Length: 164
Image (cartoon, rainbow, N blue to C red; front, side):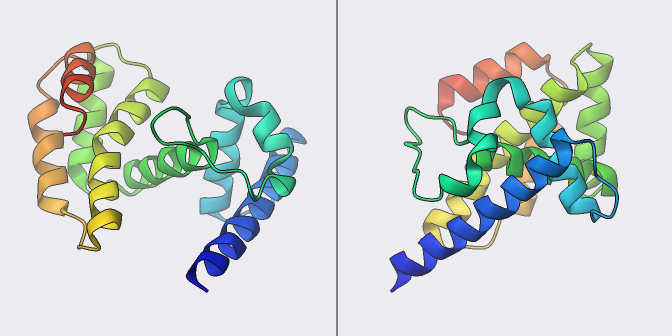
């Protein structure tokens, strides 16, 4: 039963993302809520990478992505949007501070969002895998610690450790 529920959720989610994709590519974002607007905008930012997946999201509800070898475009834009939401709300404030520190180091907006997402994702996976509360203190601590480093050094640390 749990597997069927997950499949139904994934199907509904991808149909919704396809709806947002259609709105985004037709530049018809009026009437969308903030969350949906950010998702649609994130899809447009990733159009070159994931066009075919977004274009057929409504019929790809059974498609699974291997986390060891594939980038899951749906998860990618979801994380991207979560970071954009944190940044817009300045919550936690350390996201905003980290963002500003990276921009001063000439890291683009898009790359900075990805960098924050790379810090956030392992913590989210730990939460889902272990069914534990999100470690907000660790997230804030990492943002504070990494904001002092250059973006390429942060990527190297994240790549070498496999997590944060």
